[in-house]
Image (cartoon, rainbow, N blue to C red):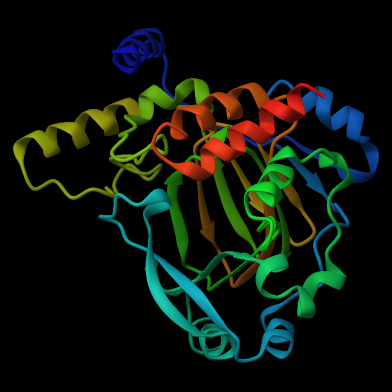
Length: 324
């Protein structure tokens, strides 16, 4: 298969070296224009952190409790043996204030939470809490074109686009290694706390031994911590898969950064990434499509559109946008 061929080629090339740990490039947000960011990072597909972005709203867990009160929110938790996207499984719903007090606020000062503790992950601001939070939202000037939101609003004219979305989690929680859907770019602005981000170039994807079990979003036999398998080995073949995955992982270059309040990270399409909450964190994010990734996004949407209706409509909207 093409994936096997790329794996063999990448492994033979990389076998002459060991993987490196390198910092994500960081720049002061006030020193770069939208044109600079597009030409230096978005178009070539390079991650970057914009320090002091001025985009992150002044949100912390206590303020969110006051604003959101008891409205119910869906929760996720990271399950190490899960094959779900980012190893995140549904953990039920709860009133926001109850979740925040029990799993975030009451943990401050008593050490990190378990990795599997519930977290609020990718919760739509516009669809679910615009009345309480929208006035604080400032969309980043560096990502002014967003054809994904444009297409989503056409596909779902009642609810509109989900972006931007809200995250709240306790220190110690995380999401597993994953790739964002439909070849979209991604940004996240950190409002509160610290997050550890690790990213791998899409060119090194074969070395991560991706498994495509249900759609075009892969899961991975192991995360970037080689001693922490996400898929338990219950047979000889699975143990062999994990062993090969860990051997290949040693060849992968990993970019890493600690995101601080006020920072904004840009993740190019197709880059696998893994995120840990070093403290209780609040963040806001969005996925987007512009001219730099429209062709890749359209191609993936057309493939998924063969078996699902929503990507088919997204593909139609993208084709229409490309023609204008």
